[in-house]
Length: 120
Image 1: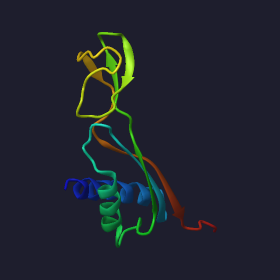
Image 2 (image 1 turned 180 degrees about the vertical axis):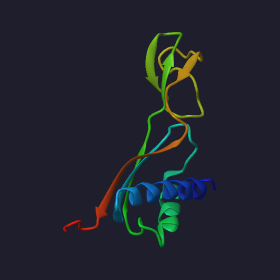
Image 3 (image 1 turned 30 degrees about the vertical axis):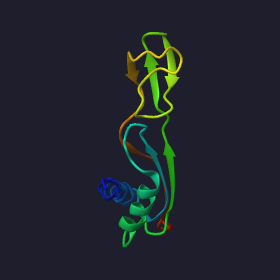
Image 4 (image 1 turned 120 degrees about the vertical axis):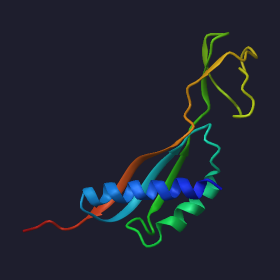
């Protein structure tokens, strides 16, 4: 299960950014999962909750967006969306000469934080 490793690395980055901005708590995290990442969204959510324990992000809300499997078909000269990542064939012309536009990684798109009251 590589989801736990992805979440551990993500929480390291999240805490680093949160601390740089004077956060006392991370209240929301938005992640984008690449269409070709082989990440199981439900496993990612489960693992994220585990790795957040004892961190600034403990109890935060997690929003996960699954990227579409976007490609460019050189045969029919169209942008297409694959129905599944396992079948890499154009649904328009059945061509296999595709350029993958979609990502295969995990990106932190947005963080929501609470900051210390900085009144003097």
